[in-house]
Image (cartoon, rainbow, N blue to C red; front, side, top):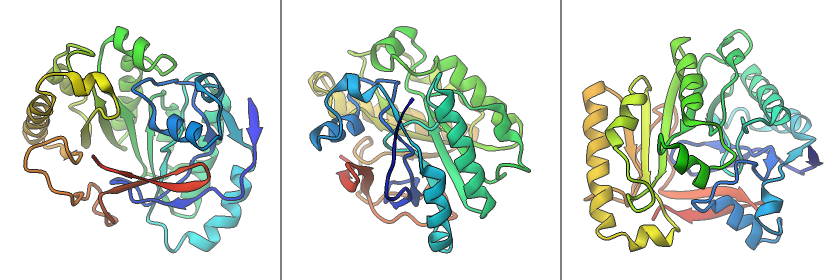
Length: 289
């Protein structure tokens, strides 16, 4: 795998479920076509040339060295570190990425820094070793469908849905906190599906985040797309209340929404309803609309 170096790794974010974040890979072989916001920003900033460049990930070779320098300076400020917003920490079939991610989680946990992790890959079973990795980490997958056809069209390089669920269920069964990000959820003109069937597959998790699909013309062209998402949001809320699952509906997805983002994790406060992700070496700002 190609390698790059960076001058810094940890950065402050204002995303709903993040405090500090890091991205130790540039690019992502999953090649998602929703479209991918991170890829578009990297392209706009001239960091990558095109889609084919993006799906050839480059690992940050000095990631662990940077952590050794940055953790002592920041550990008293950090409440949690999220992996990742512009890449995937357990990139499917990319062992070098997964191996580095495990070392990063171990390094952060060594200083009692809790991690939240989000992937479209498969979690290694060794994360259940709470003597090596923190027992307070939280692991999640992105899941917006169960359709093989949808995955091939929109998440061609990512892990199969059933494999993601199985790996997450294993960590749950070992007593670890798990959650699911159901974002960006497609409209029926992209994939006709039963939302309840998807929810039933993940009824074991501790939290569910649900959000609409943005930046896609077909979604905007779908008649009554706002009402569709309102109904979906109500379905998610009712389901979560039935199974005692914490939930969060992203801003703009449900009726009578407000711009203040509710806190998902009581251990640290949410700063605002603005998303900041580290793109092009800067904290780019994205409004939750």
